[in-house]
Length: 271
DNA sequence: ACTGGCTCCTGAGGGC
DNA sequence: TGCCCTCAGGAGCCAG
Image (cartoon, rainbow, N blue to C red; front, side, top):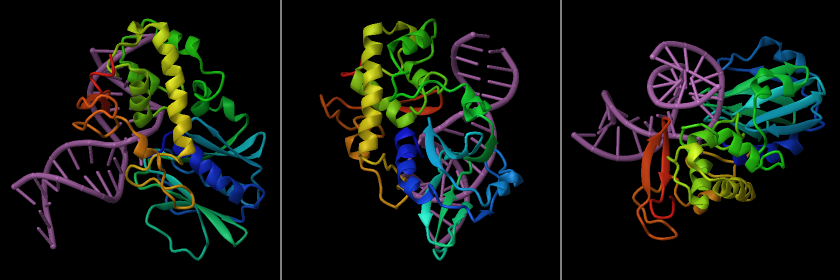
């Protein structure tokens, strides 16, 4: 489900409910996620989260500089703020009770996500160590992208979705950023001129920032932590619009599968 | 070193 | 109504 804007929307929604509240109980109803939820998650009971930060599509609940809870929402995960009286839903796998008045529930039908306590510097954790720069930071620039493209024949869309190159660009926003940059998703990375990669850096930023402003994209089931949907869907130019007219030039939007992922583009606007 | 393919899992939606 | 098929917003692992 979630790409960077959806994870950031979740972070902003959860943060005020979590920071400074003591975790009074942790309930693991289903531990079979992408990695099993370890039993020592119990050791976080009684601790007080002091920040909630995002790294790519990962969320990090910080208890101390060397103690964090790492959360990834996978394809279908979500976090929501509940009252303990609210009825439990199927697939509410992990519950963080906060002093009896409220709780955070991790819900994930497909169980591709991760809930994992980690010790030590999180930047050194194997899941985070190899990640590329944040797309909205100064660390992401044309030099980085050009270097990643050098000598690589993979389609540019596959490249920008690789989180070793840049984090947080998933299937929706990859198609959208390439549309805005006028680059065809199938283009081999090494063939793209630096000038065009410069626009791609800009459109990746733009698309993600616009979506965060709109509260993310709701395609099927994404809702923020308070249950409201994201409104970016109305601004999609190509994603899931195969056969429909391009919003710019009216040419039919095309669809193909690239690296096992659905890909959309306008054959007239994107060269 | 790259690359493409496969895999984990459940649920929604379409066709018959 | 029900059954079967396809597809879905992620990403690690594997063989060639």
